[in-house]
Image (cartoon, rainbow, N blue to C red; front, side):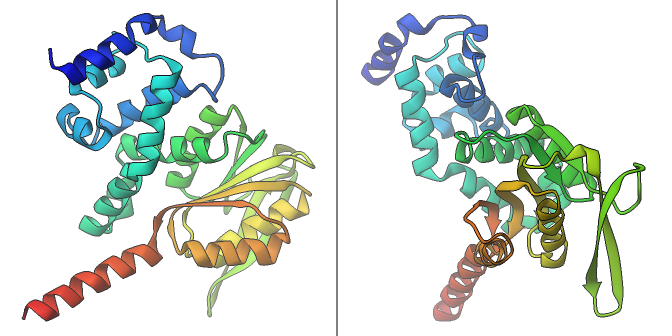
Length: 272
């Protein structure tokens, strides 16, 4: 056993507790690390994770398989390393750049889990009552993931009525086409703290309408989560509509993607 492996092993000898000890709340850092490592295994081998996180592969395997539950201090170190290494951002950007097909990205259960855990980590200090998702199947699936993680009600918007008591908002899709966004009035209580979940944040007319419906119910939008989109434009829209600060989480910031592609093209031109 290597010296580095042995130090991690000794550090967690007292952490051989039961998985159920981790389930106190969604804020439990041990449970967060367990879920994150499980999701990251969809994309990296234990050896690759060892290189990224500077934790021995054997120890990571023990955590993922629940042979050992890390001490809180150890879990915090791993979580901070995941944050500082930007490993989640790297995964999402890599997948998007390689195929640019959202269905391919979102059909991977690891992506859904990482998205939910990223939002949970950023909004862990907020008491969320309702998750409001955009009217498409992927947004609803992501909303369901968030609903489970935040222990919050899920309200999925629709283009067609499925309740007798609805609130609606017409919005312009293009120069020649309008659509309508519908939500059951009883699903979102007044004064609720909500998260708005959408897939493509660049569909600003849709996102703007979702914010309008939230304002209609006098809710407080604690966060806006988009799988992809221009973070700067989404933040600008939220500030204009809400008049207060809200957390904006964009998993794939298209501003950054454009910059990366521009640099790659510049390198190719210079090489020629």
